[in-house]
Image (cartoon, rainbow, N blue to C red; front, side, top):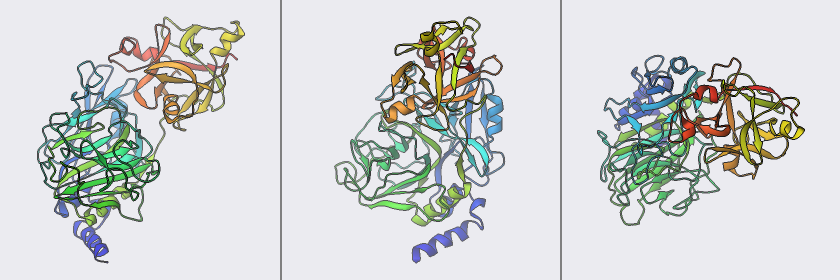
Length: 505
């Protein structure tokens, strides 16, 4: 009863309506103010009206800061959509709303070199994670392997064994077993400096260091050289597998005490559930902690870059937040009413239909996406071509194997085989039923980036900065600029635009 009364008392003290206060207002009223507040979807203070994030477009490399529609409100997705129309856009900065300038920018390489030519990590697509909050469109941060953000010179973050708290709202269905999809406190050197030098939220199904119940994914704490679900570094059966589409993850720690808490971010009927609360791990280095105070998103403390996940909002606090404070924050998150929205735009593709995909670049308007064995290429095809070629250039549209809101292309002449990407090359391969295959064979149609009226472009679901592209008559998934020769920005928009027509077979 005391816990319930303190929760209600905190709400009364902070605001007469949950919606009228932001998460950081609630933390401040609880005596544990935010030292960093990051979100591309909404303001996290009721009075905040500054920039939430910055985007850079591929057509001319100019940038635009995106703020909320009104103080304390949802991000102005319409401004982004207008700015990024007919080109690609990347999220270059995720601004800190706390006033401490603890902004997140492109992570530099550390112990693991980033995939960019200069060793930095990739930036996220600005359109990879559309959602709505109370019916208003916004965009999250879709992290593919190789993508990461960081700040190694943070003001006010916990160091050593100082107390801190943090939460993040994540996509509970977007994860993998790579190391490590984190948000939180990490090394300032971008290298592994030993046990206890991190304290971050981890989300995924990696089982190398620890696990929870079921097959995952799980919320765990990345404390460096270990993902911990509880006191036992191997398994905590009270740490559940997560299935919620939107998930609130919370980690907090102080001297020889830490906790994992979580909940469905859309649940209006409850508070966070405590998965673990107790002593630090007994392994050397974790008690006391040696936190360094950097902030990471999407990567490990040593810049390990194998993970994927989606981030919508999150904060870090000074001090150890009470359960009541965190429950009030969860109520605020639920009141924001996160919901899914379509990843698809442009001309509709009918599931089950047989289609052809014609190139629109001026050199190649008689060429179609086809395959020769397992290699995806473009070939000149007409209605009088040999029957085998006409079949090789015809694809059956299926609901996306990895995400049903997008599409997959099944080979007509090799039923059960689909276009997928592998090391960014396109191939036709048999569906092996794996999560990796399903995701690699899923593409999200959008209005064509090129000049062809009625054309479509197809983003790779798992790498939304990359599109199906023909380059030297071969099929790739390419970004608008990058380290591969097929990432050349020259003719990019036309090369990734195809006219969808009736199938040849």
